[in-house]
Image 1 (cartoon, one colour):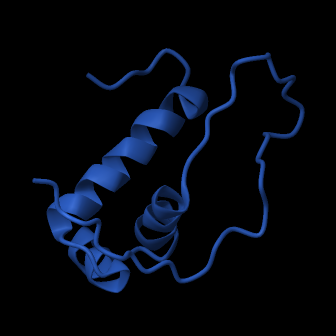
Image 2: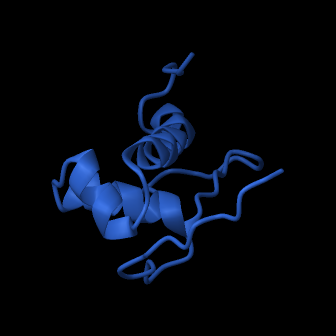
Length: 88
């Protein structure tokens, strides 16, 4: 039996729908999509400088769930920021 997904709180959705570093030519198929939860996790930890426990509490989720979301978004964006880098 599966559990119902707990409602996750998002303080504010992004005000943009796409980000591209200035001066970089996009290669077809090189885009990555992140969801609102992942955006919020980045915002809380990397911009607001909260620790994962504080961020999880604000999002109304457990710390292990927050950690999975946070790691997911890092796995998606790090290869674009640091070419040649990958997670295992």
